[in-house]
Amino acid sequence: MKILIVEDEPGLRESIEAYFTEGDNVCEIANDFTSALAKVSVYRYDCIILDLTLPHGNGLDIIKHLKENQYNDGLLIISAKNSLDDRLTGLDLGADDYLTKPFHLSELKSRVAAIVRRKSFDGNNFLKFNEIAIDLSAKTVLVNALPIKVTPKEYSLLLYFIANKGKVVSKSAIAEHLWGDSIDAADNFDFIYSHVKNLRRKLLEAGGNDYIQAAYGMGYKFIEQ
Amino acid sequence: MKLLDKYNRINIAVTVGIMLVTGIIYYYTISAILTNQIDKDLVLEENEVFSYVRKNQRLPDVYESNHQQIVFEPLGNNRLERRFLDTVYRETTENDLEPGRALISSVTVSGKNFRILVTQSKVETEYLIQIIFLITIGVIVILLVVLILLNRFILKSIWQPFYKVLSQLRDFSPTNQTAVANTPSEIDEFKELDNAVVTMAGRVRNDYQNLKAFTENASHELMTPISVINSKLDTLLQTDKFTDKQSKLLNDVYGTVSRLTRLNKNMLLLAKIENGLIQDEQEVNIKEVLTECLDLYEEILKNKNITLETQLNDKKVEASILLLDVLLNNLINNAIKHNHRNGTINIELNSRQLIISNTGNADIDFEQVLKRFSKSNESEGIGLGLTICKQVCDNYGFILDYNRADRIHVFTITF
Image (cartoon, rainbow over the protein chains, first blue to last red):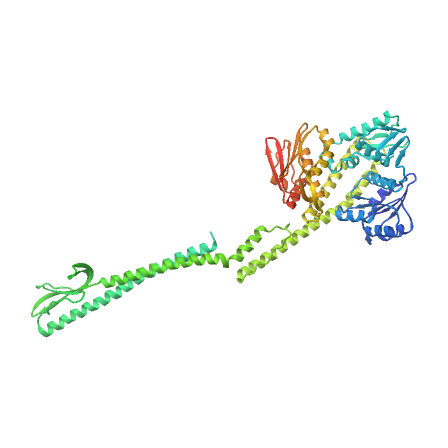
């Protein structure tokens, strides 16, 4: 997977780069409008992570440039501006998704993974991970080719884990991914534990491996075996 | 008391006082002049008697003329002081008693002393004084009537610009988008007042806009460092094994960063609502938004063992889905957050009202809560929730109200 990170804030750029660089993933970076434009004019990426407020230009113009040239790169906007207008303009221009800063890296990764999956859709919309297969259009899960019954939350949780395989995912990232802002009303994250426990039990009962590990009381890790 | 009333009261009191004093002075002056006139007549009569006596060496015949009587009496050897006095005049033809003026004098005729008493009626003088008194009273009454009528006229027309400026001031709010308009007037004071008010309103609104712009910009700028912290935390999480102590610390930092994020997001949202930047108004069914909203809270409710009872009817309003979502989310969020374990939440939606009631312990001072950053001690929230709710309600003309009965907190939105 080849990814371009367009972000002027060095701290954030480095974190994203470090989080995404693994296995056969390649990350390139651009820290301003000109270098970003230069890169997207020459190279093609599976996904471009694009900050809208850039030195020397507006990120929206990069989207326009891509669309004018009919480049089909995946596009994820990350912006501190939570304004509806920017969001709509970005999506209208052809961005695939929009993520408001601040975000969890795991959330970013799962969004990027979803975009890349959609872009490489080739008829059979299956996501495979060892013995687990996920039918993305029917939203069902198969273990060893046998379907297992999962709730919508468990389904999203599994996708989230697989997108962030090998990473420790914090409980607050999971909570925000599954419940959004409503998580504010909860006293604790106990109910996340029951969701994770149920998912793990269902995978094990269907003969799958034990991939989900608790990580130091802070979160969970979906290990690659 | 109105300024004009106050002014008039003093004005009228002083005017009436002066009129009365003038009347009194008039009375005394005129009666003095008239008495003086009568005295002169009396002296004239006396002189006629003297000259008659000198010429004829006897007393004149006593006759009665108009309003004048003369009486001679032998005096013997007594001396008599010549003097004027007020007395009673007896009108012989009609036998009336009238106020009169008399002169007592003496004359010697052939060695005999006689007393002369000349009396003249004062009835015409009294009549004159009565007329003067009536005229004075009449003028006072006319003056009062004119002043009262003038007062009404002035209030209706001349003071109109003042009241207009005043009502504009009363309705003025820095959040309001409509500007304070100039009130034309021909009176310098009102023109100055109007100019001062318009300038002040402009300045206040400008300052307020700047402050809001600052808040919005500051929140924007804060988002970048917060996202760096967030991403660094996520990165740190990947590094190595952590001890229990370290993970506890990390968890706390995570929690604090998400609170900071929410606070910042809410501040931005509030600034946007106040600036009227969210305007995707469309017909929305509150029931649908509410149902979607409640779905999100299902597990959290279960976790706290809170019973949810709903009675929802369709209710369509013209509003932004985003804001409506924020409004309902905040209210439900509060109802859960300020609830206790095994509590209940009751939600009723009809065409007139949305009523959300929940069990809870803490008392809320509603007015206080609506102010920014105020929160109850037990609350982990950031105190902007209800302020945002109020702002959204204000935007669409809904009325947000709070009641507490026993330990049930009831929030009502009246559409």
